[in-house]
Amino acid sequence: MTTYKVGYFVGSLATASINRMLSKALIRMSPPDLEFVEIPIKDLPVYSYDYDADYPAAGRALKDAIASIDAVLFVTPEYNRSIPGGLKNAIDWASRPPGQNSFADKPCAVIGISPGRIGTAIAQQHLRSVLGYLNAPQMNAPEAYINYQPGLITDTGEVADQSTAQFLQRFMNEFRTFITQVLTVLPHER
Image (tube, rainbow, N blue to C red):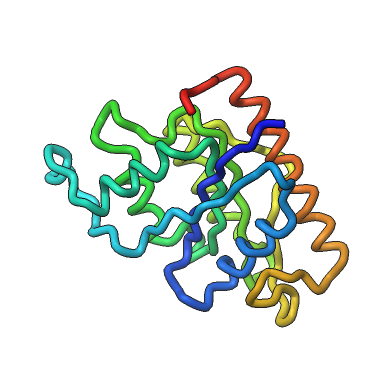
């Protein structure tokens, strides 16, 4: 059995983010052959092509972190009907300079949780558009728009609702299958 290293982005920079709680739940629900590492984004300066000739340490660290993983999991809230600025900034850093797109051929999945009824659906649509442009293969099903209710997920990632727990486990099992499929067709150096 192959173990895959999955890097995950939490789109919210907030310490008490419900999407951070969701990321912990997803890790708990994952198949044992997925190993997770968070890719931090909070210390990145705002991207400008002025940096392309000489990336700062935070930009190089981001690109190195993505280079060291097999797949990417985006766990993101929805801000003003789109993805948070911090996450978009990280994507811009990782996809530059031209010809050095870190997301190309990396299998990825998108999920989010929100107190709103549409559970990050529009943010995910925008993120998927960006990832499509960046040639990042995306798991398209199951889609996962989680409606947050107090007590649904604990700070340690325990899920109180059994049907939500089963869904999250299924989502992560499907992601595992998707990673295998993509990396079989588009193998990369490990």
